[in-house]
Image (tube, rainbow, N blue to C red; front, side):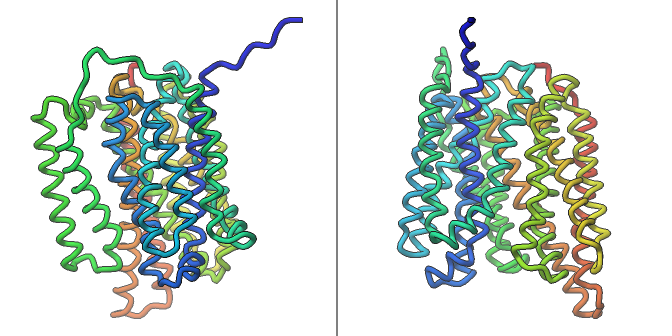
Length: 463
């Protein structure tokens, strides 16, 4: 008898960071699904309880670049393991929160932990796997995220009904501890750097200020009014702070963001196409529930069952597409995926007030297929275009592109939809609601077309 071969260490690394990615995605999806129940339990209205989601988004998005850069300097394993500890602690505190204000505050801690995970997981996977398997590795990581998103809403609803909403935070503890043990045991430490670079505190502060102002303005524009003084002021502050950030980064010796990364066409194009992709995905996430619930009269539960189709398809397809891109390159799969996503959005724009629900499912399958085909090759191209000592900031830029696309997608879809409805008030139309939905999907399809073109024009990374 021959002894069994031990499992390759890289797969233990994937299990460790995959568990962490699944946990954080599941948490985000579960909280969003039961937010009204949490608000009623704590005795606050929608305007207050929505900050449970908004503050988490702002914390994660604003800190991604800084924590990716910190991983490059201090070691990706160090920051990732610390992120698991912070996320578990934040989850416990959220579950114990006695009021809405304390829950919002504890979500900042949870967001800090999530940002530490998101900003370093792709870098750890890229370093653990050889270049010829990079697409497969990032595809598997994406699969774990999509599985978390898929199961989070249903698990969150079940836990809330059977145990109570606080259980959706406590449920993170066991998988978090498992991910922590696996990460400490199997994620290799980064090799020591011959030169110690300093962390760019000034650049980090300017970016956080500018980016948070931009995201907050875009996130609250529909509620406060796009031309209101708060939104205008936030956008002006964002423009000044981000302009100052780029000025500083060009002159400091050890910048937070190495702007030379964007000189590589494969890198800059992958960032732009990632933003386009997430604009499209979150346009669907914003518009389709309105179509199904308000336009078609479906219950929230039935609409949720239909909506799970897209992330489920993405979870199945992403690792397959990543493995394929390792063989044939990333450019063609990425462009094909964006084109499929654009086609799915166009077909969504054709859904009218009496379209059969199986047509809705088909469009969700097509958009899920397109996104799943796109994500892994594009992420592989971006990470492969960055040198090994810049993998953390590259992962942070990739995660930031997701946040920008998410906020822009919701903001753009909401602006188009509400603009069409506002015009209908002056010229009443029986089809105004569906005209607004159609215009939003067509706008997102145009963004997908731009992403397809960008993916076609870029080259593949050399490594």
